[in-house]
Length: 226
Image (cartoon, rainbow, N blue to C red; front, side, top):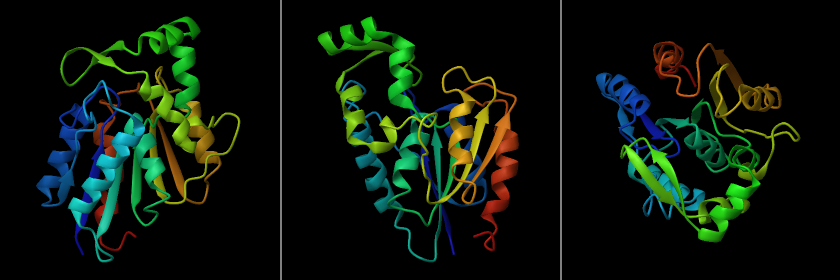
């Protein structure tokens, strides 16, 4: 049996983020396959959940997992939402969600405000700080419109239960101001049989908590830990 890892980075980030680099090195040290695709496709401006999911599925094909392999899917922030969407297709995998972006539709409206959302829609372009490029990058409003194509993106965990069919570990900072920890709390409560939540004394990036997350995830690599 071999262990293969798919890592999905967050919004306005990339496959060389601090978290991706940290976990890449941990898995490569153990000679395990680790793939972290660039989800800014076809570019950041034209990126949508749909285009990102296409890349996820293509990368899974490249991983060439079979019934004897163990697949672990990491998802950070927006990548955590993408990983959760993939669970319906790949329930046999183990999922590690880092401050997953549940409730994204509601949060974007409250974050930017109605006027700013209307301006973005009208101009079809808005600048966002991009962690991978180190500068402001434009994003099309198609990114927001595409949410409606994905049930999990429009669901509000504070108002309705979100069901996760696969074995899932969620790590969320109690001081997260980007995605409130209560989002993961509600999802965990609705999935007591499949999900375990770790609430950490950290913010959204979870950089300080990476050693703890690794110590928690590493036992899953045991061939007997199914």
